[in-house]
Amino acid sequence: LHSVQSTNYHQLADAILAEIRAGKLRPGDKLPPQREFAYSRGIAVSTAQRVYAELQRRGMVSGEVGRGTFVRLAVPAGRLTTSLAEPTSLRIDLDLNFPTVPEQEALLSSSIAELMRRDEQWRPAFAPASARGTRALRNTTATFLSSAPGRWSLPADRLLFAGNGKQAIAAALAATVRRGELLGVEALTYPFIKTIAQQLGIRLVPLPLDDEGIVPAALVETHEDVGLSAIYLQPALHNPLGVTMSSARSAEIAEILRTQGILAIEDTTYAFLDPNGASLQWLAPEDVIRIDSLSKRLAPGLTLGFIVAPGRRVEDISRALHSGAWVPPAFAQTVCSRWMADGTAAKIADAKRIDAAARQRLAHERLGRFGLTGNGHAYHSWLPLPPSWRADMFVAAAARHNIALTPASAFAVVAGHAPNAVRLALSAPPLEVLAEALEKLASILDGGCDAPPPVE
Ligand SMILES: Cc1ncc(COP(=O)(O)O)c(C=O)c1O
Image (cartoon, rainbow, N blue to C red; front, side, top):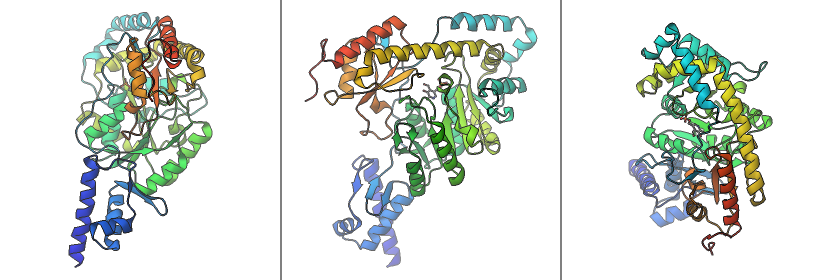
């Protein structure tokens, strides 16, 4: 009898799993109470309990006495979906964020020209590369990424290099979360996470957000519930919401990481823009892998991704970088090292801080009355839409005016659970074109222009 029952509950759990994978049961759906489930399947209540416990053990559902059992799995490993990757064909790009300032091209070029005149510094650009970089690159990067004097200074021996930020994320995940394991992510997250997780067979679990980022209690509860192998988060200038954690919130999250032994992969790609942007790694260096990149500071065409790892993880991540073919070419290492060492990178990053703040002011002037949110330092803003507009219709209406926007669904970890909102990337158009585009969006929201009739 025992073996019949045990086959039964495994088979029943598999059947429910198949329904989740087929999309018949969607993340967030409530499963029937165990008694009802037992009755409908003609099984004992004790077997139903074992089915639900098995589903919970596998991380497919979360359950709480009194609240019920909910489907939790967000992205079953399987067919790849597309992510935001291709530049839009629309004329005004508020979809992708590749910040540039007018002076950057001349600054970057003259720094390379100077480097090429010094044979002994230029020659290494053509040599084979390592994920650890040269000692000079590690020291230069450590100084460059360290916070203001007097705060935490970054240990150079914990640095690793990838081709860009995305490759750095891929390597950190590949080294720390195994196929089939669970990664907690902010319920709205950087879209690349969704596709790389699929590629690596990692299952995503959405973590609830408030206006400061991840809700601490929800992180603890989720971890206790399903057992997360790691979390991925952006504590400063979160993409897409633009929020930065207060120091109290980041201290609270860091404390949870330390006490619960949760590994965090923190992405500080945009943090350089925010003078208040803390890094969790300052607070919990042994529990945090920090990811950063030069793509937004400088230019995505010739860039580096950075990984600052806890000492005990350096070796594993280095191996992942090599085996995933994510080590940056020596050419990029040599040139980027020069840009960081001679002040070029800092100069351009400073100019971008000023540029981003100016673009934010413009966005708030034009769209503030519609409830536009986002930190005053970010290169993107979040626009919640009135109920009369659905995000996809608003994106279509903007496209008719040649303006590309991103609907919230692109960032939602759980398909079908996106808020009614769009993200505006503010960095690409010249300022006057941006002003015009924002004006146009305001008039679409006002119901002017040739906007289609609002949703009933
Ligand atoms: C939050 C976040 N992390 C990482 C990246 C990737 O940076 P890279 O262009 O260096 O791959 C981006 C790029 O948009 C991003 O928005």
